[in-house]
Length: 324
Image (cartoon, rainbow, N blue to C red; front, side, top):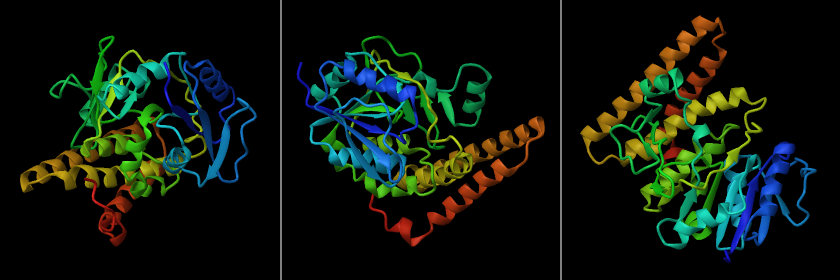
């Protein structure tokens, strides 16, 4: 089988053995990629681990801009876009390519159950907050459905050999028709990278695609391993907490609230977001009392939420192009 594809890797060059594991996986892929593009932040050193035939590029640091830079450099029809800490089998690309080749979608990905809330008390808590809930009332032929709270419902019980439509998927690793990404004008969502951590970048990417009629499917058999080097959050807790507040407000307002067609549906979306926000702060306050932590993390997230509301009232926000 011939597939005209590249591998695009976003990295800071510090994942070490986990990055070496990704390179071993790439070396084993059948068919081989035509090129491997590695994008690092400006001022960072290229990793010691090498394939020997990859090409390195540099750009400002950011989860979005690094991926978009790699895709802009891509000369092939398709791309496997991945972080620096994943591994997969030799037939991984073949499995992801099939639904794209067949015209079922423009993007495909494997399921990543480790990104879903672990079963038990944590899953119940996430469901109560409308942050992440098991699929009960939403379509079970989907992997993920985005909720009006800005959270999502998920289907953990995928059947072998099936394709599942999805409104969001982890950006950790996905296969794409490059021309479809370029049609999305994702550079317009530069606010995702504006505070040192790109919270909700994956949900923004794939939900925007869904709103524009660009389909994504999850291939149930295309399983891969996320080794989670945590290079984006290591020593970055403050910016991550702030962005989780700021980006959630902007995502909800831009992609959910503004897409509602009537007063009642907008009021319902606002109520859902308010419910999620209140329960989130309630449980975080309980954690402060139970663990006797300081309130600095909660204060940072609150500032992010506050500044997100200020941003959506700004001229910069109003000047963003329409989503669809």
